[in-house]
Length: 633
Image 1 (cartoon, rainbow, N blue to C red):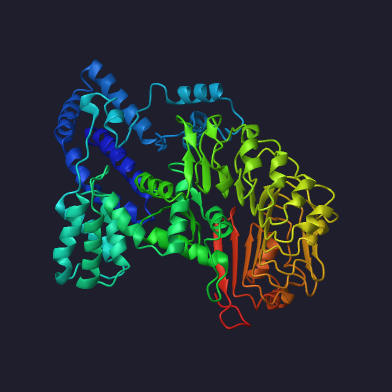
Image 2 (tube, rainbow, N blue to C red):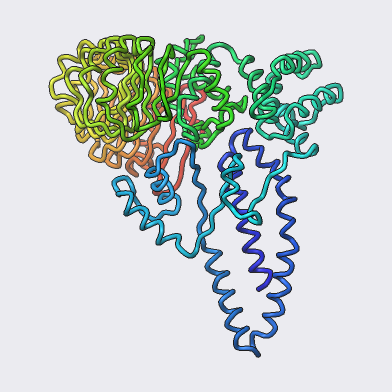
């Protein structure tokens, strides 16, 4: 029993470390976690206490049958052990500009206390969480600020030391020589490597950044020496020792277009999860991405995103089942540096509701506070983009800025609870990006047709019944709709948008048949159909969807056959089927009647890649057409 009890305690400690390591495990910065071996020295300080506990519990166990008090004690300990083994653990990040309600909802989700906390009031959330945690919880706080750590009693504080020479060297080699098999530093570079590590002063993030920067250089003395000389020039009295100068060198090494993408990531709040698709939309609309060779803008942008991750300037948070980046985050130290750089270059300014504030000549404004009264209108004529990252904002207080920002090309209101768009928005004739995803707006007004330069409009619940004004949206290339109640009669209204390149229907289609007529959507490259429970038949006429590259069906349980006419889509490269009818899955897997399977598969033999997945049956399979006329698994 003694070993079990102490084992539970040590197991919890290990689980906590493993959880943190797993959270950041996909990026190189998470290799800081492998360097947490330095923390084990602190843990070993508790070894004597654990041994004393073991000795005491062993002695108590010997007398449990002869001493009633001891027997009750050991029984309670055993019960506690069983309860502890089934306990929960959660990790919640609290940023500097956090919102209390959002934090409570995250805690509720982490502990699975409630299934949906979206519409719960704060008082109710507090009460539920209190009852769940009261009397049986322990809190671990981590911070780089001494003031936060000092809130704990002195015997409960652990101050982490910088990495020692051994662990610093291991982390550096993993970063700098990640492309080599043995991850070893050549002898001719070891002296320079030691100099780099001296600059890092044992800080894992600094080691990771400089290591990743060197990993994209040729492993020669001259290449490394030029980086070190640049580091020497950039060295100064840093607020965060050893990091700023390294980040300056890393930033200077970025190509111009990649530098803009990096600085743009700083507009998001601290610890914000940056979705891949949202980032890519922002970058394209901002003009940071140019087409290269045969790659689309989206492909180029995704390459830039992966490059920033490979340089440890962004951390991977989540990947999808195909290993593709789903979301990432910017380390708060890196974000601090990026914001400082962005402010100096008038690239962007973040408003967090503290003190006086002026837009000045910045080109992008990020609003991270509900208190927008102090926003100064000076310089708003220079604004190119406004991003709002707070759920509750009085849109009326933004009216003066919107009215004066005649050059505004991006307005992202995603996640805000606004009920309607102010009229000032429809006078922003340069607007190219209008982000309305997850807002409280129920109906998209006809006046949106006045925004003739609009390229991307994201997720609106209902469209206007009359779409005559939409004929003027000649530049609209990306449209995402949710809960729009489209059917066989209303869907053809979308076909006036002939320049659409991407169409995303999320719980937006309620019809049984979806028909694409001749010459409909001539430039559409990506089509996503999500959660269409009634959809049972898709018809594609010849000369429709002439440029389609990606076709995606997810959550269409009545779809029992491949789209009729899919063989006409000669440009189609990817077909994705998730949670379709069993009949369709059996056809794809060639488990049905032989002739029927062969006939259906011939229709998609020209498609390079077909993915199909079943959430209920927990399987995913990819079929790749390698030859151009036959499938190979």
